[in-house]
Image (cartoon, rainbow over all chains, first blue to last red; front, side, top):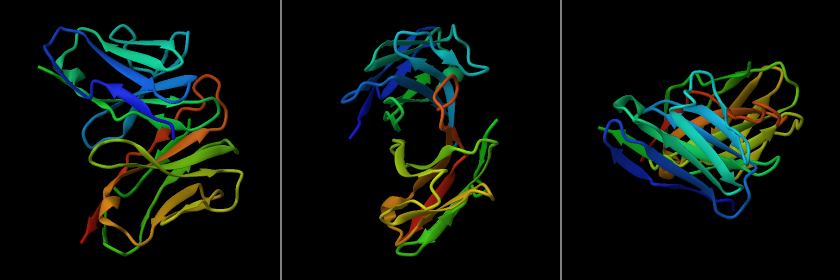
Length: 114
Length: 118
């Protein structure tokens, strides 16, 4: 099957620092990757969509300069939360899609900003 | 814009019994996909079942089946012979068939928390 990994699975950082989260498709090339944010007991909220080699498309209300997304290759996308603050604490989930196929989800990253 | 509504925040079922989770959606498109995802306490999203709108036959996957009513824009999930491992959040999702621009993004409902009683 198609496997998507995320690293780290859990991170704690101080307010004002930046945190990078990696998303990798392990056994397939992902033409598109998605980043979601999920608050406790809520649904997934799409933050941005990225295609390899091009700039990410951000959803309305998501700050591009705060949530930097780099889709450097067909198997790797990164989300960098810059100058993190406690309100950025959340569960971040990535997913990857092969061309015209299903989306496969990573296991998520829990970010806690102190 | 498309929307997905899950009107049951929580549901409970006795082990070995059957439960149905409701989902309605709104769209002006004629061709699309519908999904049910399961999110257990580990929070890993797992695809349970998928339905293509142009197919009239309801999708089934072992103990999981859907009742797809296109005209009513309804897409319910039936879990038969419920097991303790079925306890999770269940999300209904919609996706356009196209892939350009914002098409192809999953649009999720708010979820239904399913508890299974032993």
